[in-house]
Length: 129
Image (cartoon, rainbow, N blue to C red; front, side, top):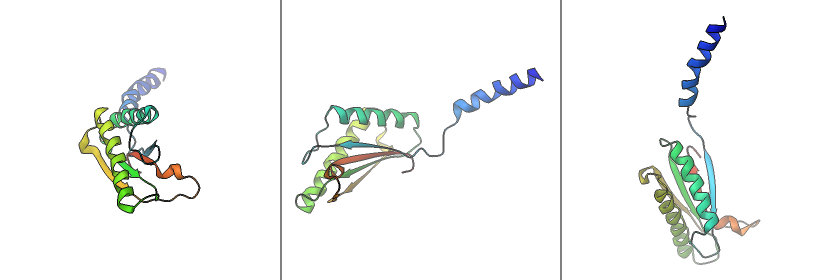
C-alpha cells in the first residue's frame, strides 16, 4: 500500500509542473504624469513584472490599453493615450514579450470624477481580461 501511495505521488509531480491555467486574466497598471507618455522608474518596474509573467505563459495574449483624460482636445487626448500605449508596448518587447502576442487599444478622452490619475494610465492584461 505504501509503495502504491509513493508511486502515485511521484507520478503526479510532473503533471503539476506542466499545469497551466486556461486563463490567468492578470492586470497591471502603469501610471503617467499628466500630459506625459514618459516612463519613469516605477513604471519600468511594473512593466518588467508584467513581462516576466507574460513570458511564463507564452501562449496567452497580452493587451495594452492606453488611457488619457479629457483635459484637452479630443484628438490630442487620443494621441497621448496612443503614445502611452506605444511606450509600454515597446518596453514589453524589450523585456522579451513577442510583439505578435500584443494587442494595443486606446481609450480617450476618459473622465473619472473620483480620481483623475486613473485617466493617466496604461493597463496591461495577460490572458483573458
